Image (cartoon, rainbow, N blue to C red; front, top):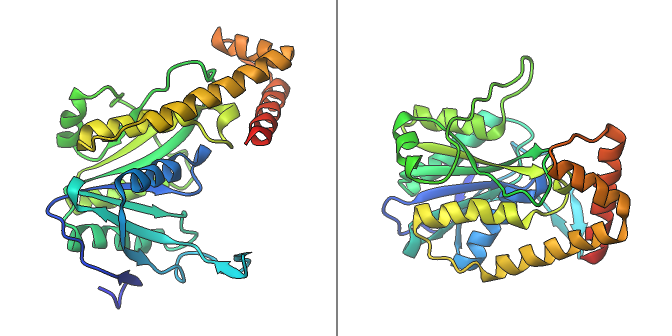
Length: 277
């Protein structure tokens, strides 16, 4: 396998039949990357493998930080106590099929994963004060039935527009189905004016499901504090800028904004949150 796919295994993980959770760095609001990073941090995930970038990522224009080249990374982490594997990566720019098969080779042959979960975000034109929803797309009837006991929407119908490429998560679920690996693509609709900044409530929504489903026993007090702080910042935006408050009031009443108003809301919220950070 190592000759066909550029995979490095640093240490064989001591796992029985874990679940795999995947997150991509280019996701809207960094949702997948932040959620998987949170899992690694809270559960002390140990790196055990990676996919080398040469075949999949453009290496020209690599960023330099502290005199070190920052090459794209695609890494696997494991935590035996929770029977969990986490994969974090940028979205490959080429050879999607080969890349995703490499991911599943590690998952299947080195970890014997029993199921996988991808994390993604989509644009919502609702206000940030509305509760976040969790949507699920599955690759088998069996996993759909298993998910019936959880609070999420399982009847999402999505078809790739003609001429467009399927999403990376959809492609992964299709390949996993061919290997008889049950897969779930989790999606959280995010308010459009939080799409380029973090959405702590969206992170909590997807992580709460994984916590319950995988019995991870995570204490979310730190994330709850992030949610409170972000809500306080957004409340400050509304109090300082009456026009922005009006826009959000209209969204809360399920009224649409004009394209110009959408742009003004996005810019004001982005600028305020980034200055606060």
